[in-house]
Image (cartoon, rainbow, N blue to C red; front, side, top):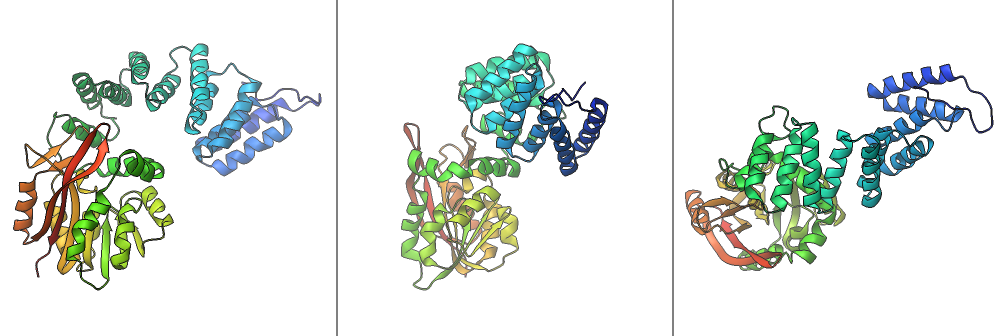
Length: 411
């Protein structure tokens, strides 16, 4: 494998020395010593700007740093030098997909597959891109081809299930998810079990897996406000404030915005807060909340554990669109009671369950019945100040109904 060509100037280079330098840089790269590897690749390129391997691997290295624009530029240059390497086209496709250049990314994956039919990384990239482009039928074809080549690829079975899900084929989706659980190397099996439970297949978990919530909202953070307010007509914060107003004292309060997200509820709570604290699992959501400059403190953590370390610290705890990811609310109520001062308020929204105390919908959100909430309140000594029906948002052409509840803690 040669890393060199004669420079355009005609000046000869020491090919053996460049190959040795490349092997050294590659070893450093594989050992995770990225700065030293980069220096090695750049030393090669200084002598030979058309070195395919140095350009390609320097681009891969930048991708590992999430510097995708530079990764794309370098790998594109490598492909210009030598367009015959399928792996380079795959890596170029990955960079372009992550930059949102979907048509170019698809062309790169297809070029890789033309050069090397059945190339598994190209199939994985193409299948994921088609999925992200809301083309589930085409994506499914790719995953079927991929699984024929690599039948023990657990994530491929998960994506096959997701494609069937999006196409409305529930039985095929469940079968694919169950197949994924057969492999010991399946990533995040708790999430798959959670998905299965939401399809009525398997035991109902107490809550959504922490990793699922964190990953979901880390990905969703940048477009969260736009999506909820404009597309879903989200109204939970204003409805919560309307229910709370009659029960708020005239003096400012120490307020906890539980599962604060990007701070949509914080906007409603800020006028009544002496001190406003937000806590959330997602660092990306907290970053967005910080931009609003509403909070005196923002903290990352699991909600129940975090409240357990803040005894009698708050006068009001608010949670909108938070309990939809928790099935068993008893531990939350207990933790909130401990974090509230005497006669403090807990205000929250839930989606409404009709046929059971707690239900996990195919949307992967929990719903709770009125009777269930009343039973928990009575068991914890809470007084129900408000409990009203509400339309929380829209999804497609239907309304999502739920409840707004205000509880007062024991004296």
